[in-house]
Image 1 (cartoon, rainbow, N blue to C red):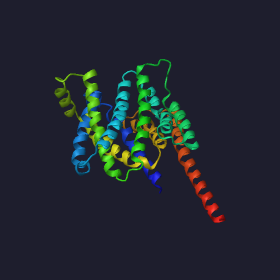
Image 2: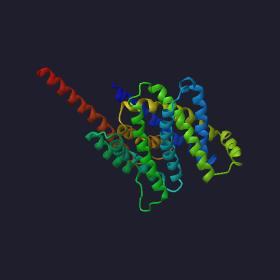
Image 3: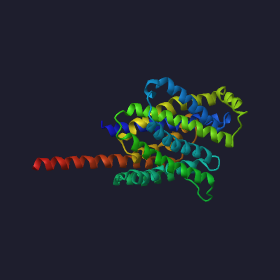
Image 4: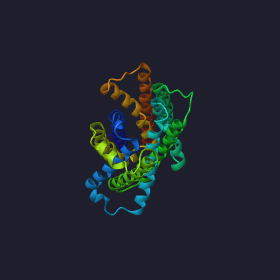
Length: 314
């Protein structure tokens, strides 16, 4: 198994874990406002990280803090814009617009890294965005600020995937760097979440009461534990560690599986209905990912055979 395939399988596991959060936090927001929930999540993630990664955090450099801060700003801005946008748009439009990250990522990859996107990756992007359209059936007859916020979120995530690739690709201590980047992102996300909480959800005086309510509510507490241990500690560390072994474009294609996985879990766990359009749309998304993966593998194999033939002829 190649390093790139291993990395992509790890990214699929991350997509699965993040997709499950949609089902797990479904009832949590009845007891805790979204931005406060995010602040609690990343506060606990920070404390867990300090316990688990204490040795790796010693000697963190100013350069690593700066890079982690940029990642944290891109991640938290995208994450929080998506949550805010959901208040003003439909779930189907939010899912489709969030999936447009697969369009923004190749653009960011070319602009920021000056690296070409392969023909099969471009084909995969086109197929995936078509599949997401069929899957979500979004109605854009009335665009609103929630749609715009979600679109900005998608662009930020495209930048996030590309910037993460830029700063980790040549690292000789990727394990330590991944830990440090994850921790700085947690702290930036706490600050951003609290800022939005104070702007839109509550006051300093209400903070202890609302936090206690969240920690004593079973749905909210389960959601916090899941998103802290798996959604934050595991996923953000693994992504920073393995994404450099593939490309940002392929990572974006893999993460486009999230609405499909989330809907499948909702059918299994919440007994929601799965329609034929969703089946066809999900199949197209999978087809787009496979087109990029298999097409690139064939091109690599052809290139290797050509080099082997030339060396034999000599």
